[in-house]
Length: 168
Image 1 (tube, one colour):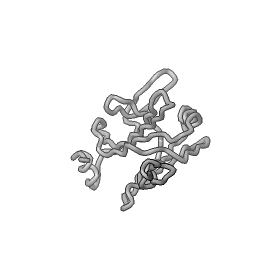
Image 2 (cartoon, one colour; image 1 turned 90 degrees about the vertical axis):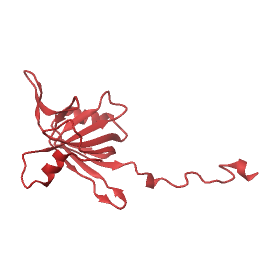
Image 3 (cartoon, one colour; image 1 turned 180 degrees about the vertical axis):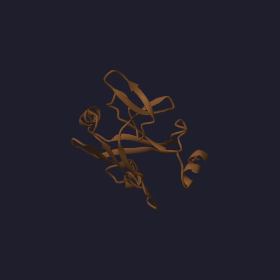
Image 4 (cartoon, one colour; image 1 turned 90 degrees about the horizontal axis):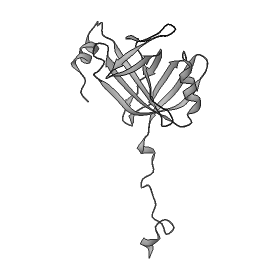
């Protein structure tokens, strides 16, 4: 993965006016469309007489701003670790979606810069949201990888009951 010069300059600068933005995509087979969330109120994305919403437009998709905290994964010898996700429960639609889903939700986390929202600098595309809890003020969950190292190897034992043809 190559990281843009824009991101590296901001990361290594002693002071900068640039802001990294995390874009979260929550998707599940039972959802009509993915839920798109942003950590930054970059611009107004919807304004009516009763609603004013902020968010980030990236690659033609609108990510709605929600106050949230994300713990990035540790990079260890065992592979990337878990991520933690906390979203302020300020909108009823997230809670309603959680109540209707009973299996892990696919999660993609991307980092873009505020001055180049169409350029994805860092991406974690294959996490699953588990251990979801919510109350009136907070939605929390753990983002985990579907770790192939947990699968038994070989996947099937050759015995007379599972493979009778080789024992003739």
